[in-house]
Length: 135
Image 1 (cartoon, rainbow, N blue to C red):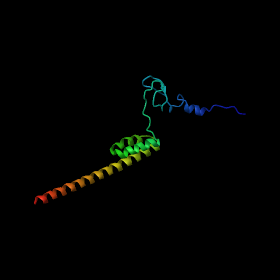
Image 2: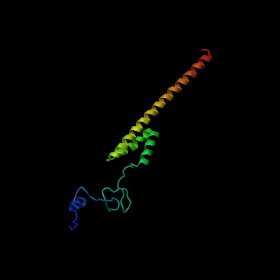
Image 3: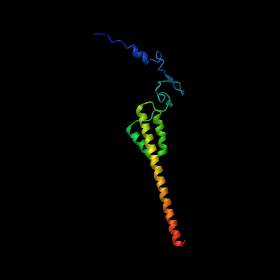
Image 4: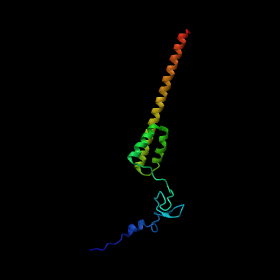
């Protein structure tokens, strides 16, 4: 039976002292050492960096509805998702952007159609008024 030897290659990769790619950070508030991927300090709770936006399906549906209901403001979450490094977040960001542009275009089209209809109605009313006045 062979004795279990520790894997020194894995230990070297995970040790911040031997691998310069992994470096521990310190909390700017209390100085506690924290991992590089930490969003909050485990000691004092200070926010270190913003967590990435959620890619959960419920959150996606809520953002898609928001992008359709308030078209110009859908750009804000789209940019947040597009700035992420993972592919899933980028796809969500592009989809939000597409929904926002489509919704904005439909809103402009309906607005122009309403203005056109109101103009026709006002012009028809003015023509009837002129005809009734005998002019």
